[in-house]
Image 1 (cartoon, helix red, strand yellow):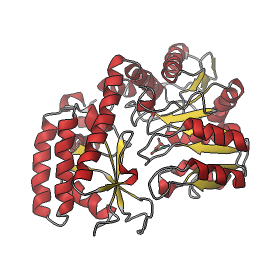
Image 2: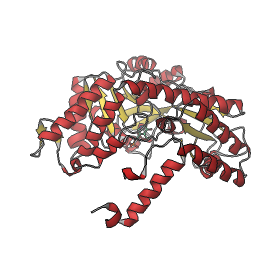
Image 3: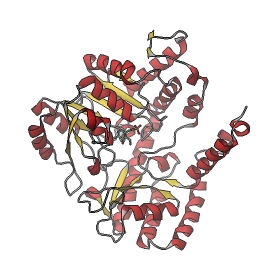
Image 4: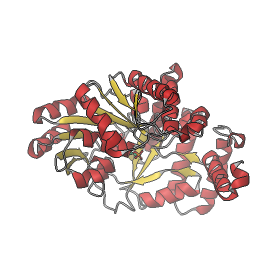
Length: 414
Ligand SMILES: Cc1ncc(COP(=O)(O)O)c(C=O)c1O
């Protein structure tokens, strides 16, 4: 039976979401549009199979085909990141990180990560996350210029003496210098763990510094710049860590792996390994750069003054409206972004003085610098006259027209 005839309620809501994704301009930096073939295998019979364990060592029968699938995913992941070991089972980026901590730390150990309000992620030690509850967490941040000051990180590390330093971010527009983090970790005798969830698609294309060989362990999501299915992965070159990571994921924190998602990860990796991937990753960066240049030319400040990656952070500290106001006004104009705290923040995390804007999803639709220039000017028009709801409605109609020229999905596919 089809979803439409069995559960019209969920079918209709899915169709509404499809329309939303197609008609609006998706500029949330952590989102992307995955490939139809990735979704095809994700919606396949592979969802039925229990396969606790790892290829060749399962706790269930009938795993001969899923063993091959998982091994392909592992091999492609290793090739992609140029490393010796990959675990492709984490159900999410957060579970990948939990798995890394479980493998290398004991409860109560000290970790040093990037402050959430400075662009870090919840799982890098925030007190509301299990990473901040199970481990004693300390933080470094960015300076008022929006950049990590590596000398300061070293100073903090010398005082804290963490067992692990976590690098990687959710809202940082500049390259992360893994070699510098390695030197700091060596100086204080800490493990170095990189969470490249946001930048992985650029890393594997050679468009961002490589976390290997500097980092002991690397984790990522597969659904952000990598453009694959929702999920997580963990990589290392250290054999002893590899064994610990496998046990930390299963049986440590997960049961049966999501074989349909692992197959989808394999399909996503095939895209990431292709020549076209490098073209996409280059364009993601070029589009973010164009976005930043236009915003600067229109009188908007960028945290760190620009971007080296897939996102920009608008600072609204010198504007009479907040990140929340901007988020709402842009949403009314058909542009989906998210509010974000900025260095020197004066407002609450629910209001903020910044907006994070990313290029990966619109680049996946085929948009290039010309479209990003046009969109950036529309963003500035809306923000310049933030209470003008008539303008917002006009921009929304214009951008829907633009979106219709860059088809990403059609109804027949669902
Ligand atoms: C740097 C970083 N790590 C981990 C995650 C967590 O990923 P997930 O949402 O799949 O748990 C995110 C998600 O935003 C992230 O930005």
